[in-house]
Image (cartoon, rainbow, N blue to C red; front, side):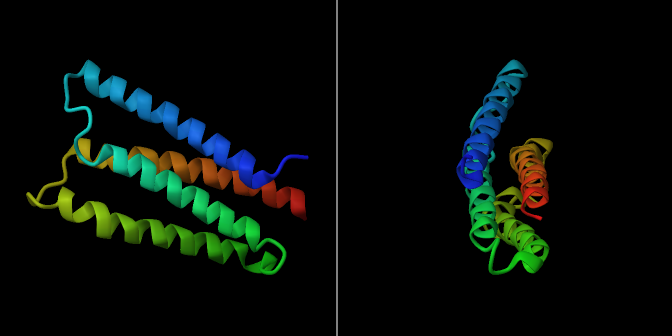
Length: 128
């Protein structure tokens, strides 16, 4: 049986890498700036946070089994805090968040959240 944390890390990395490539292809097809709007940082930071949060939940699975849901929500709050500290000031500098800025952050955030949630649900159902 493989380690769920390692499997998750590989899966999340692969999904976000493919999404990043597709994101860049779409930007190129529409002749938009490829690496603007902190897109690389958005993908890397979201991947790092998703892996970190899953890893923390995995490491606390025995000691804090009944609190894992609250810890997951705390992880989501951490992601929002990182957005408001790292990305929001730059995006809001001109008093307007463009669709490109929104997509640069939200696409990796949403994909990471989906992968994280599905993986956690599957993993938690196995440990009961």
